[in-house]
Length: 97
Image 1 (cartoon, one colour):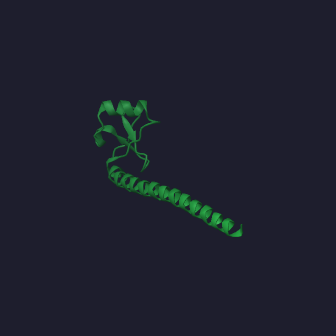
Image 2: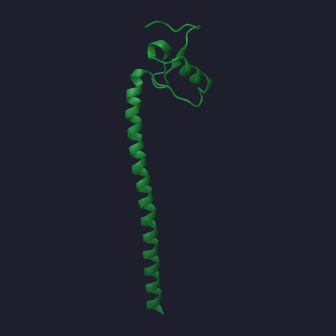
Image 3: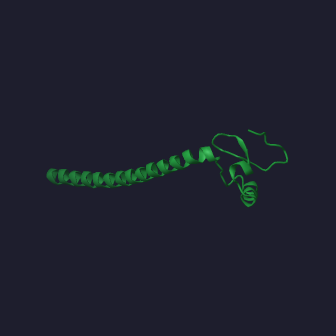
């Protein structure tokens, strides 16, 4: 592995936290310029980490979808429970009157 010099165009992998030569990672100059300009908004992963990152992002997306469904179900069940409780209270009140 060749060390990245001050004059070399390099990109930083946010997963393994290493710097890479653009040419070694196949990063075109136009992409390097965009990454340099918007480095706070854009994320870049080296070739090795990118494969794992894609799998992780897919898994997180699936978990997020399941979580959203679970939250919706909890809201529905809470509403049903509240309605059932209100109905039971009404029946008890009616019996007492």
